[in-house]
Length: 293
Image (cartoon, one colour):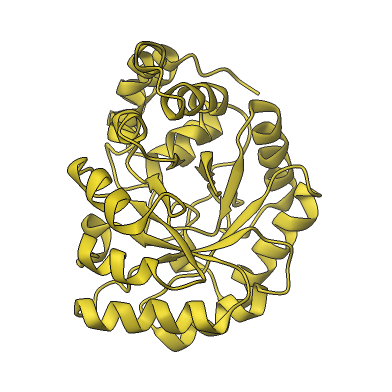
């Protein structure tokens, strides 16, 4: 089962916006040392919407090369076009990835039936398993639990990253989708409780900054150890919050830069973290025990 502490890893960029693969290698080493269990590459935190097709494919290729089997790679390949999503997914399906992470189609707001057909077409067209990704706050569309339950019957749809923060969905999805279906939190602020309620892990923004703490949190929460999970999560709560003081991944890229792991590059229309937020993010990093690499 795809489970545990997974990082929605940032994409390092130079000042000109070009992808910096030297920094990417350092990031991967950082997560291997920190105990991160899966690296989610070219997801929305990785600025996937600003990547060209060629860059997107190369980023996933290089991730597989640089990881060299030390940490499994999940490839973000979602878009708001079924044909483009399928084309991109097929282009990297030949690589040694663990799964695809496919976000709900954004902006065009498909119906629930449209999303069933979209995800079914992707899952039918690739060899590696598909993880659904529901994040209504970014996409404008909500993949309802009843729809997820329908999709869970597909043999090549393995789980969901559920980023609504609505914890009552965990029981509904577990009952409807079965024990073999992976339930992953996509909301760091509620991830601890999500896992304590039966979720299998988290695809985390916070793990970019404190991978070791997020791994310990996942180990405790997925084993049902509430006191230990809450003890670990307590110092991380400010970071869960402040990494969204501006649109993701603006704050987290600044935070990872402060760790000495990446440069300042970010692509328009995103801009560097406003100076007014530096102190609050830095304080949250300190409370969470973040240390320079």
